[in-house]
Image 1: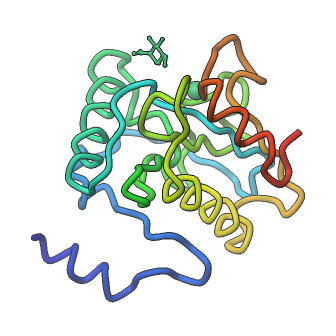
Image 2: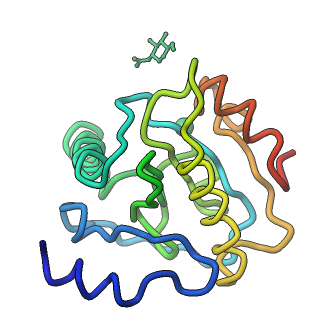
Amino acid sequence: MKVAFVVFTLFLCSEGCPRIISRSEWGGQRSKCTSYLKPPMTYAVIHHTEGNRCFSTSTCSAQMRNVQSYHMKNRKWCDIGYSFLVGEDGNVYEGRGWKTLGAHTLNYNSVGYGICFLGNFTGVAPGTKALNAAQQLIKCAVSKGMLKSNYILKGHRQLGSTKCPGNTLYNIIKKWPHWQ
Ligand SMILES: *[C@@H]1O[C@H](CO)[C@@H](O)[C@H](O)[C@H]1NC(C)=O
Ligand SMILES: [Zn+2]
């Protein structure tokens, strides 16, 4: 295990925040992005990758590397498109993070964070650990002043022509606070 991993565990959970697996921990390529956000953001937008689910830190890290590679090589983006991703191992994975402009929701990238579940949640729900981690991340974002306290929660499909984040996950987030 990397030294960074060991060091990180000593700094677990700044107040009310979930564990966020850093780019270096999941083995990500360096971001080439040069555009930044001006928090606090108004929107939290929920997505799914529509790819493989993952239930361990090693398999979720591998999924992160796959998605990042697809976004950087095929789509020619400066980094993985989402702000944060969530695995069914119960961890949040660092994407573009709090301060970097994302590429997740056309017309909303400069006013919102894209939070993406790793997996296809069209016909099946994400596990409780992932659902809890995403909700904790949203609360954490408010407590850090990154997301407005009167933020608006949306599913990607409400803001663009897509089925994302899948019917099953969409029906779940519709019951979460601030969804409208
Ligand atoms: C996602 O799951 C649905 C049904 O559960 C399936 O119809 C669809 O093809 C899957 N998407 C992908 C990209 O595999
Ligand atoms: Zn989406």
